Length: 266
Image 1 (tube, rainbow, N blue to C red):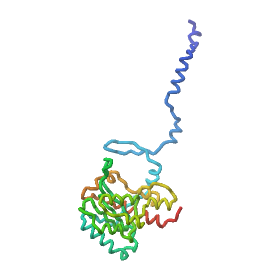
Image 2 (cartoon, rainbow, N blue to C red; image 1 turned 60 degrees about the horizontal axis):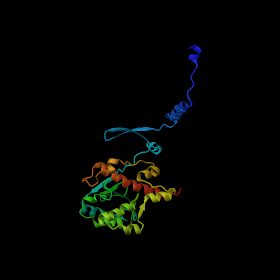
Image 3 (cartoon, rainbow, N blue to C red; image 1 turned 90 degrees about the vertical axis):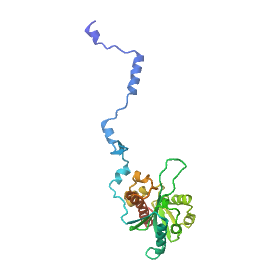
């Protein structure tokens, strides 16, 4: 065979050409370097159950990193017995119109243990009430043999405005759990859902979380540590971190109401 003949490239049969073309089409697409660079997202490393994971932050998370933490720095009163709770609530009622405003706004929230058994929710364990930047009350109702009447009186008093995110659901749950009558408070409109108020003031239609409202309205972050949020709120006594977490939530509700109520519609 001559050198010219060896150099001559043999053409492939048509069926082999078709197969080769299909294989080329099936190869994974490799994007150009400049294209992948434009899609880079800030990565964060987290540790869960001892396993290191790499995740991606959303744009809102990245923006909020520079926001300060919202933290209650006043006095926290923790009550786990019905007689103490009754005395505290009687004192609050007696102060209305005296050293408290005639119409007093109270940041309100509740906590209960998270259960993963469908249809078997745990009872409300803690009721949080924040009266000002200086005082917050935590009532560990799951430790009490009965719910004190003065606590119900504070909830139903027409001089008290209870404010919180999804607050009506929290109150209805209290009624189911402890037969604590809350319907009069809802009917007399002394209960304010901050999510609804925010949508009116901001002309939006969001399903707000407490943390989301803090970031958007107060420009502050609220610590929503999962271990605390999903911890066992029935356990007595509450830990220092649990007390701070619960107080922060009630304080955030009070601060949000103050800010939103004084705000003109956007």
